[in-house]
Length: 392
Image (cartoon, rainbow, N blue to C red; front, side):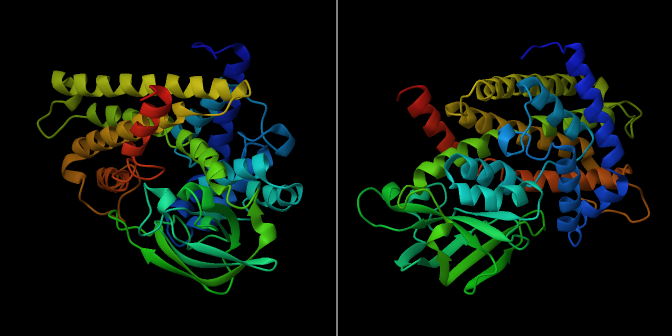
C-alpha cells in the first residue's frame, strides 16, 4: 500500500467511479431510501455488484472474491461512499460468509456461498439476547439435540433486518458444562421454520431496522451447524473481527465531512459563511485529520489481510476509533444543519434542498447513537485492546 496511486490504481479508481455513476441511478437510490422498497432496491444493487464481480470483493478468489490489493479495496470503498451508494448488507457477505468459507463443510459452502453473494439469501445475525449483549457468553437460547435435529428455544434481540431475512445465523447454548464460552454452537436457521416469530423494535430515528426474534421449539437440522458442537465461540470471535473491521466508517466519514464543508461554505443568514469562522475551521480540520489517521489504520489492517493474516486486535481499534469518529462527524453535521435539523422532508423540495439536508443530518445523528454499542460496545473493545494489545 502506498500513499500515492500508481497509474494502474488511478485507472481502477476511474473504472469504479464510472460504474457508480452509471449503475447507482437516482431511481435506484430512491428505491433504497423508501422503507417499503428498501429490500428490493438493495437486492437490485447487490446483483449489479455481483454481476461486475465486486459484491464479495473481500472473499478468497476461489469463492468469487477479488484479487485486490489493500489500496484497491480502499479506493473502492471511498468511491462508493462519495457516490452516496450503499455497501452490501453486511450480515451475509461480510459476516457469515467468512465463517462459511473458513469453517463450513464443503456442502455448506456449496449450498450457501453462491446465493449469499448474489443476494438470493438475506441473512440476519442472532447474537444478542435480552440478558446477553456485551456479555455475549451469557446467552441462554438453548439448542437440545433430538436425533438429526436441534430443538431451539429462546429469544434474540436487536436483530437488524430480521423482518427481511431468509436465514439467521445464531449462537445457541448446547452445553452448560465448563466455561460459558465452551458450551456454545453456531447454527444456520431458516427463518420460515415453524416456531419463529419476529417483533419490530422502532429505534430512536423512528425507523424499523431492529427486531426481537423468538424461537419456540424450532427444529433445526444438525447439518446446519457450522463446525463442531460447542465450538461456536471460536467461530463467533472470527466473525466479529471481520464485522468490526467493516464498521470503521471511513468512507462515510469522508463523504459527510465533504458535505459539511460544502454547506459551511454557503452564506449564512448573517451573510458570512460558517467556514470563515476560525473556531469552526479548527473543529472541521481536527476531524478531517482524525479520519485520515483512521483511514491509514484501516489500510494497514487490509494490507495485513492481503498477506494472509486475519484482522485481530486492530479490528477493535478500527471499531473503537471508527465509531467515535462517526459520532463526532454526525454531531458536527447536525450542528451545521442547524435550523433545518429537526424538519421533516418537504415533498415540494428536492434532495439537495435545505430541508432534506437537515432531515438527513437528523436521521444520521439519531441512528449514529448506536455505533458505540453494536458490533461489541466500545467498552468491550477497550478490554480487548488492553488484553491482547497491551497484555494487561
